[in-house]
Length: 139
Ligand code: T46
Image 1 (cartoon, protein in one colour):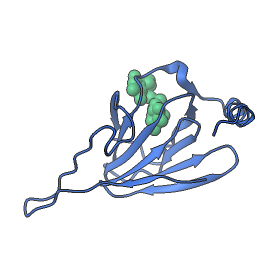
Image 2 (cartoon, rainbow, N blue to C red):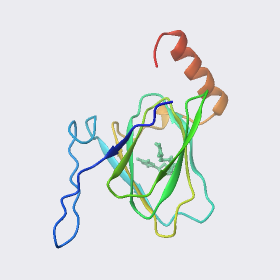
Image 3 (cartoon, helix red, strand yellow):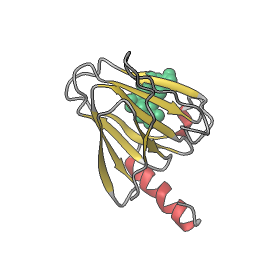
């Protein structure tokens, strides 16, 4: 499984750092939605789903957390610890976010508007989805 992590260019000077992200340049899709999570309760695991079409870039802009990615046959754990790093998460990837440090803020850029019907929340359904895509010659 290939993990795609972007390292964004900070504009640093004596005042501190600034990161600017533009669609199709730093973010590989049109940004239709931005959301973020904070005050995450200690020990909690978020996510536990995949998507039919949604692509996202996850940036832990404060603190740290871990992302578990699962493509149906392989799993990888990706730590997000830097505000200038973005993890690309494709639709067909089961994702779990956990191990949030106190005060962590996870910012997400999404390629689509919120749509509950795009979620695959059942793991067996996810495995079937991945299998069908493979049978159809899709990634
Ligand atoms: C994902 C991971 C990384 C909305 O109303 N609009 C939104 O855009 C989103 C993302 C959520 N919601 C509502 C739906 C639920 O009532 O906010 C509540 C929490 O959402 P959810 O349980 O889906 O949150 P996570 O942290 O499990 O997952 C989220 C995204 O939903 C998901 O697409 O990939 O973050």
